[in-house]
Amino acid sequence: MKNKATKKAIVGILMGSDSDWPVMKAAADACHEFGIGWEAQVISAHRTPEDLAIYASGAQKRGLRVIIAGAGGAAHLPGVTAAMTPLPVIGVPIESKALKGLDSLLSIVQMPSGVPVATVAIGGGRNAGILAAQILAVRDAALTQRMVQFKERLAEESRAKNRNLAR
Ligand code: RP5
Image 1 (tube, helix red, strand yellow):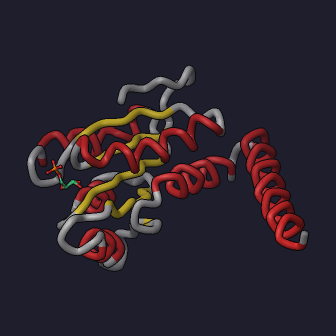
Image 2 (tube, helix red, strand yellow; image 1 turned 90 degrees about the vertical axis):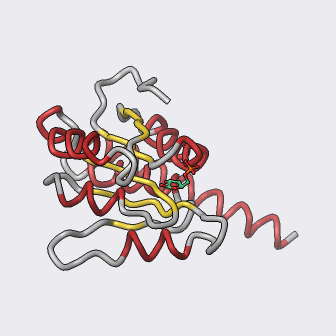
Image 3 (tube, helix red, strand yellow; image 1 turned 180 degrees about the vertical axis):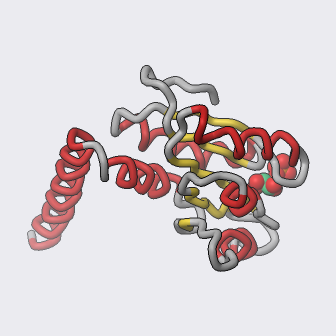
């Protein structure tokens, strides 16, 4: 789960437990696909709150530009992170056993005014990584170009599905 990108990490990926990694890995993979350096850590808002305070309050000064945080159940990790950093925070609700992730979704999305968390779908690790890339692309022409090419590929794949259906 360590930073395997060649570049310096500018996206921080947090998760409440290592059981979240299969979903959060998709965010890391998307960052990797766009050539963005990332790092991943297990830090829990409930089990290691002091570690979270240190990570979130120092993230911007360490050079991170976006944080992606995934958690399940009473999923306070993204919101508490957003409370302690000026960086944009993307929340990933992890599917929980008892409530299928609805608890995670509502815990993450229902933030008070002034402290937003950009929340993706339950299990939406890949979209979180893509959204982080889009945020970073605003001030990066080369990354914007890669995003445009990605969108063109998506469109072409969709048209191919249409052609195959028409046969
Ligand atoms: C949350 O509790 C974590 O984000 C995880 O989704 C869930 C279960 O954690 P483990 O019991 O697998 O450590 O804090």
